[in-house]
Amino acid sequence: MSIRLLIADDHPLVLAGLDDLFRTTTDVEVVARCSSGEQVLPAIETSKPDVVLLDKQMPGRDGMAILRDLQSMQNPPRAVLLTASMSEDDMLEALRRGAHGVVLKNMPPRLLVDCVRKVARGEQWLEKESLGRAIDKLLKREAAEQEVRRLLTPRELEIVRMAASGLRNSEIGARTFISEGTVRSHLYNIFQKLKVRNRTELSAFARDKGIV
Picture 1 (cartoon, one colour):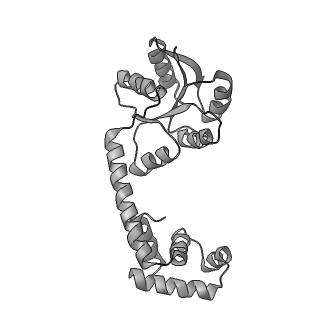
Picture 2: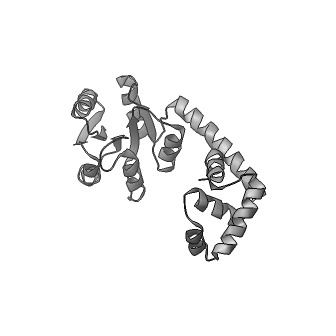
Picture 3: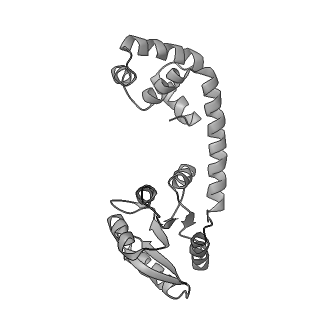
């Protein structure tokens, strides 16, 4: 039985090239072509693909947004993300959103076909170098967060995240149901524990440790 494939890319030449590639593959049937992210979900409903091949960068709803949409579907197709480059954070986010494959656009065409076959069988295909960096970064982030958790109380960690995201003391107080004075007291204690002098240094610390 052929693998039913939906392809989505906003570049006409890329979309046509992908279509030509898979139409010459005897065990893959292209059942839908989408030139924008908005077309993907309706096309899934009508064409019932086994695998969707999504360009990561598309105007409107991009590949990452569509991955999130698929998570809310019953019996969604398996998803492969096609991208020119992939940062460690993007790789981790794609995995969190349920991507079964991540493919760089400079990959030889035959490997892209192999990726679709492997994903259709229920396996994963991930770009090894980016995945390795992503896992390394995730492990370092988890170790750093555990270190911070030993220094801060859960309330203080919550305030760090909100302060680092740019919320003012009044906004933090409203969200945590405490007074501005209590927020200032917490921030003073946080500054002492983390050895930072102000919110700018606190934000940099939080980003460096991966807790925001």
